[in-house]
Image (tube, rainbow over all chains, first blue to last red):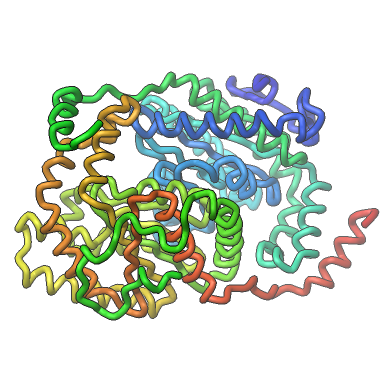
Length: 275
Length: 275
């Protein structure tokens, strides 16, 4: 079921052909409620094996327009993971020190080590999106960065990091509704940033910049997934399936002990009176 | 109910007077099952407010003998938190660079900022425990470090960080049982470290070193809690209550918006056809 959402061939796509309301073959949230819980359970099991095996890291990178639900999907899909092997990293405006370095520096520092899962809420892709839309970098600079990103992700993959890139796809009307919801709920006022409304004016430029991102960085080793995100429950379900599929392919198993288990157990039995 | 477990007056205590099997007034896990879920829900609500308010950080520090359940309590009690505002940090053998710095350096780097909760699985207290038991530092060096820890924690508290220190208290027999369980379950072999068995020989020295820790660093601003941990369900319940109580005292609330909400809403209503 993941194929229609996966881009892995540096394709030139048109985002308008992807329906943000799409829910695949599934009619309602109720239909998948039980399966969702089973999948969550499976993910925790796989995380435990990943942590024990220390053979791979998993990087799940989320991009999307404001209100596309990056925070929400991390909270709903990934917050049941064991926090000792999972981390969510978010990237705000760079500090002076970060801005003084190359554009991959601050994110590279926090990629997952072997045994760990890391979610990126935004990423180095902002360096070819917001910067490009606002003319901070020129098109040829953007192309050069996209080129470096492709190589960087290839290097990660060659070093045992599974790279999963997810674009949460929403419609402009849906975004406006979400902004209004934030304003109408006093407990959500703090989440509202007036600049979100200004950025809306650049919607088409952002979509075009994203299309270039997919075209230059969607590879077999580091595919992009266009996840329809107007229906939050489908967004969550699809992301869970995507992450699970990528981890299942690793065929993880618990490592063999390096110790003489039987000898040790006999020694312990002498110390403990009963079995 | 927390009072019998709290040390906040630099007291000289004898750990043998604390029963690792204690479950307070509660007879069984079933008795608190429903309450536990309500408390978990409450913790998530408080975390959301903490994140929004950005007025305080929360540091929850776990210490205890091998197999006391530091990993387990983080997984059971804290893994439902929103990972975007929560982090678990664990401290293994220091790297060369870390060892070349003062003993608070590597942990200070990862204390929670305002809005965040951080759990420490082990901490700078190892620098007055394992080092002391194995004679790597002398007693007067240990006293000096304990003195610096007290000031460091006071500085954190004065800077808006709630410091919660939890000692997971188990018995030596219980530890042996746990080690045997790890050896008997092939999926847990990887967790077994032969040095755990060697460290068992120093049990009494460790308990004495902990007693000194409580004596010199249990303060009103940064209390220690002796949590009985032979019964895992009571350990989880008590830790949850401790964290909740500390966060409730902050009287957190969502911040007031700095923006003209009504003006903006009217503008948005013009853009959207219906309510």
